[in-house]
Image (tube, rainbow, N blue to C red; front, side, top):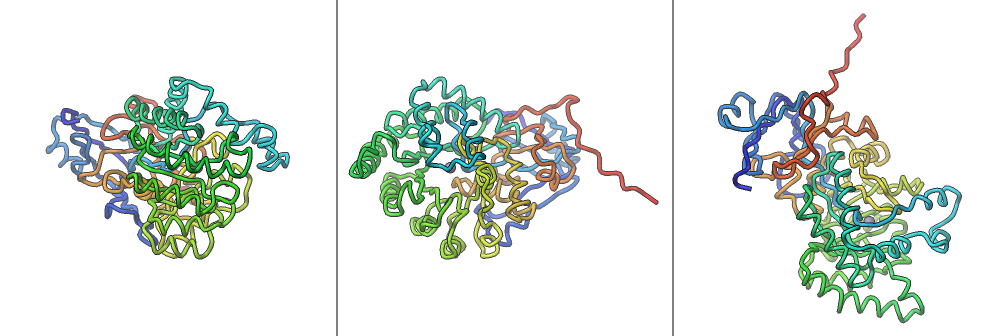
Length: 438
Ligand SMILES: [Zn+2]
């Protein structure tokens, strides 16, 4: 956007840059977020041009449009690197069924679970799915997310998977968030391939030989993902699908070790996948392998919370061993129907025992790295895309603290509004706490 007017962000109580090397931060590096005070940010042609004292920047960018941060906190736009945001109906009835003690299989037998989403998805036209997803992306943006990865995976036929990716392609063109599309044709074995055991291999043959080439030809998907979990896809099946995807030019992701350790994390490292996601049941060997690799360990604590599990991904151990950890919402209708990404940071701190800094790096720089975008987004530094989020707080530690609150009052992708800046009177950062005397 070469003709975009320059922007000057002034009056932030904190400018949290997350600036550093353009790659995933690992281990102790995750503790550094770079908090600047009395600093302004100039944006030119959609990129961060300069950071410095407001008076200096006003001189250098005299024609810039001023964005008054009114004492709020300005951060990199949040990067949600794992969602299933293109789906049809909600599945709230399963929430109660789980609370009443029904397990996954019983819910599936009553017509629920992922197959319910698949039936519903197949029946809906693309336009309708697009409209539903666009609304949901607006909600995601309203909490500070400016980049969202979206997976297919509720179609499970070639035509329906292409329909999902086409919806994601339209979202990329028509709505303001940055989107990254992932082909998850191997989300589950669909009902029509469950009639006998030989069907399973036929489904995987069709994925690799028919669906994958069409997905690549369509050109929307950037990554391939497989649900590698006992009862879904085995390690060997996952390897076969992902090796084919890699040969076809896609980046790799895995749903790995969510409920049981099956070697998913180890496979992700062997395949040099960009990320291994879930990991609530990762083995010690899997953790050690991740810590020595460039594969980002993406944890999804909202899912475990919503499913009522007491177990969470081992963020502390992973970081202490030197791994790069990201957090994401896993936004989906079955197991994590939340659009509130800062709430996931809260869970990172409260349940995964991450520091605020680690949780913020996990939702910015490392989210970007989990999408292969660490050189483009995730930090406020000269040359990076001007993807920014403004929150009505005066200290970044408040972001996960006021849990569940919607604190975002504006966000931008490449300098263009994602969540409209509430510029008039609607917000003011909370004044600093009054310290009682005497
Ligand atoms: Zn998922």
